[in-house]
Amino acid sequence: MAHQEPETPAQSARPRFQKRSDVVAERLKRWIVDTELQPGDRLPQEKQLIDEFGVSKGTVREALKALEVQGLITVSTGPKGGARIAKVPLETAARLLDNYFFFEDLSVDDLYRLRLMVEPELAYIVAPLITDDDLEALERVVAFCDCAPVDPAVERDQRMADLDFHDILAERCPNPLIRFSCRFINSLIKKGFVYQQLFDSVDGRGKIDNMETMVADGNRAHRALIAAFRNRDADQARALMLDHMREAYAHLRRMEVTLKGGFLDNP
Image 1 (cartoon, rainbow, N blue to C red):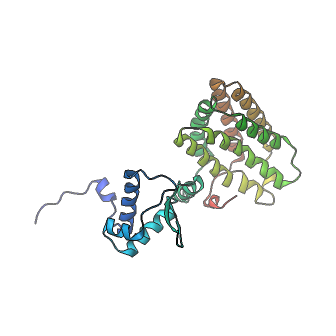
Image 2 (image 1 turned 180 degrees about the vertical axis):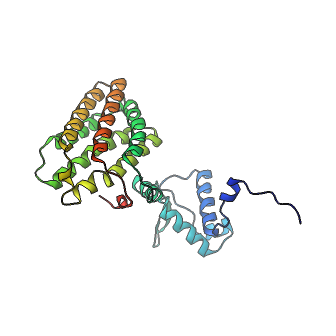
Image 3 (image 1 turned 45 degrees about the vertical axis):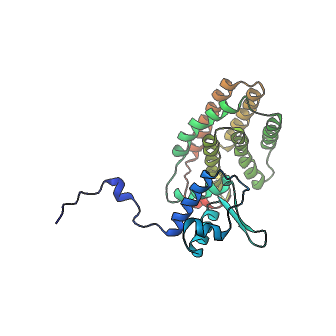
């Protein structure tokens, strides 16, 4: 009997079987890149795809459905229907990534070690790129968060707006990896730490004795950041954001909250 070499870890991790429709979906993605199709462009008709890839109608339809679920195409029916290229929405990408973390016990430490790295860099990058409209949007967030909340629902909305401030900055960032990282982290915080655990239980909010200090520190930091952005001072914006992240990290650690699988529900 011939001697067989043991499999390497990489070989043993390879999938043993891949559905034909998944293979076609991957080939379709490569074909889209090779042909330089852009969002809004129409894919060839079903018959052409069958001929192109040499598979059955059912396999093509399964492949298109997979791409639709991934957000890469939209499919419509009717005489003018068919498949069109789509740009994957951030919400779709975040939802798919959520599934990866569903059974991970993410902690405040896990998120803020990353947030401490990316948010100051985000502030540095966008400082010279911030528009007047961006500044007005940031000012509106601060004004809303400065108001005394009349009930828990308003207070919850204000804490959401605290993170909207950072989403506005992320949308101005030309680096797609930093932009997505910041938005995804913010979505985790919105769905997890503060909002479900503090506002979705009767006594959750009452157990937090440092909320007022956290809110005041956050508003002060946001106002200082806006001033740095108005001056187009990238170095100052980065330093201020680093201080802001350190303060926020300390406040959330004191709350002793963690992320659970339930964070996947919409806030």
